[in-house]
Length: 120
Image 1 (cartoon, rainbow, N blue to C red):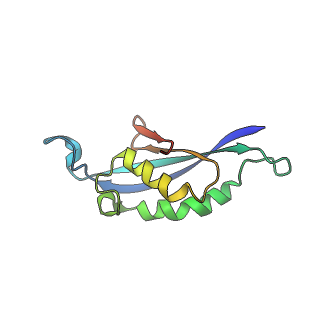
Image 2: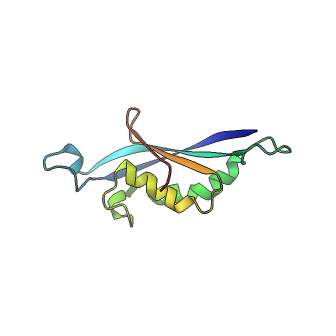
């Protein structure tokens, strides 16, 4: 049996989008309460009954999320243009080698706006 599990994290951060068109509101510094969903897929272990222990995901992802929390994202290496797309890729790049079965990273900027990144 295969399944997908999702672990959710939250962080608060400020940013601006320097490559947005002149006059666009997102060129100004502003903040978001970000939500990050990490999607992990794989075979359900016969003994444990799970794809992966959520605690293991916390151990691996917690430090990555912490590095973004209460920061000016534009100051984080690789996030000078800190769009949801680039944030999702940044998290993927930091976790994909150590988090087996990582299928997608979803970054929510608001209840209505999100990016789903699947690598590559």
